[in-house]
Amino acid sequence: MEHPGAPNNRYEPQFSQNAQTATLGMGCFWSPEALFGQLPGVIRTRVGYAGGTTIHPTYRQMGDHTETLEIDFDPTILSFEEIANKFWDSHKPSNINDYKGRQYQSLLFYRDGFQQEIIEQVLEKRKKLGKGEPETELVPYAGFQLAEDNHQKYYLKRYPNAIERLSTVYPSPDELLNSTLAARLNGLAKGYTNLERIKNEIQQWPTNPHTRQTLLELSTQIRW
Image 1 (cartoon, rainbow, N blue to C red):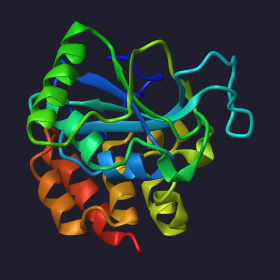
Image 2: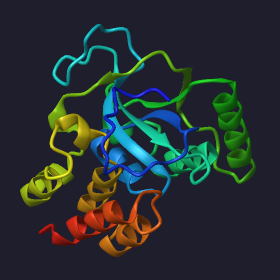
Image 3: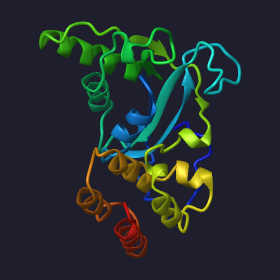
């Protein structure tokens, strides 16, 4: 599983050791991070730039890269097929946001033959359902550049009290970036999920009772 140095934070649930990574572009990366971050089975999310050749892209100088989301997920809970369907069900690949250019390109990367085969199967099923052929670039994964910190968990960071509370268990930017709870709460901040759903999921997370209770109390104490 490739991700930028996820810290070994003791408040992180221990999901499957066979976790996988999906990389996709579907318009401005803020909303997709919240959309996928709230899904059970997603371990961590991060946004960045991919699909181009520009060296050291930034938000202001992206070059030929596309705003992209990467998610690490537990395939025993959430399958790559489900991710691919969610990807196409949640955006219109043609002329995203009426934007001309590659910044908001519809991209779906495959990291190996398995992911490529699943993508082809999903597309075939969608064609049979009359959903047509999406204008999405399907390309082999060739790298991902992490976006600036202010773009990570964008909606969550609009609530200072949430960040203040979370900093008690995720004191560094990297720990917040790679936090499963932060991914869920980012989805809550955007309105894709609700607190009760998150609390019910936390009670099933593979971790010790003390950690589970700490995360439950923390989630409840945040002022939205």
